[in-house]
Image 1: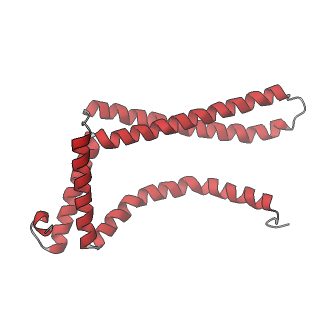
Image 2: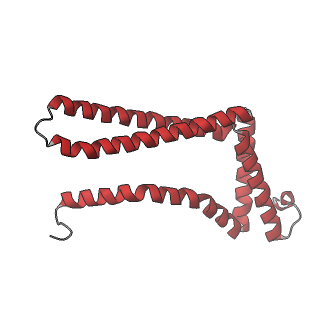
Image 3: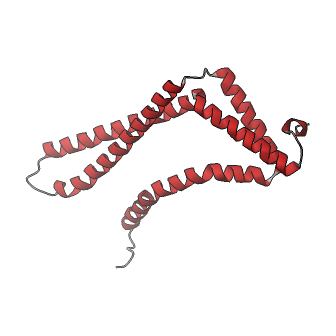
Length: 180
C-alpha cells in the first residue's frame, strides 16, 4: 500500500517531516526576518520614519531603564549563551538518540523492566537538562539585549543607517526636520 491510509501512518509521516523541516525553516526565518524588516522600512518613507522613531524610543528606554554592563561582562554572557545553546543542542540530540535506540532494545526479551526504566530515566534527565539549558539561554539573551553595550552600539548604527537612507529617499538634509 503506497502512502498508507491509516491515521497512524500519516501521523508518523507528518511528524517526521515536521522534525526534518523545523530547524532549516527556523534558520531561514531568523536569517530573513531582519532583512525583510529593513526592506519593508526602505519601501515606504512613512514606515521608515516610524521605524526610526520606534528604534530611538526603544534605545532611549533601554538606556534609561537598564544599566549598561562592561565589555568583559558582555563577553562572558555571550560565552554563557553559547555554552547553554550547545548544552541544549547536545541534550536534544542525546535524548533523540536514546529514544531511537531504545526502540529495538524494548523488544529484546533479555532486557528487563529495570533496565528499560533506567533508559527512560536517563531520557527524562536529558529532557530536563535540555529545558534548563533552553530557559537559561533565553534568560541570558533577554538580559544581554537590555544591558549589552555591543547591542546598543548596533542599534545606534542601525538608526544612523536608516536615517541616512531616509535622507537619501526624501532629499532632506536631516531626519529631525522631517519629523514635523
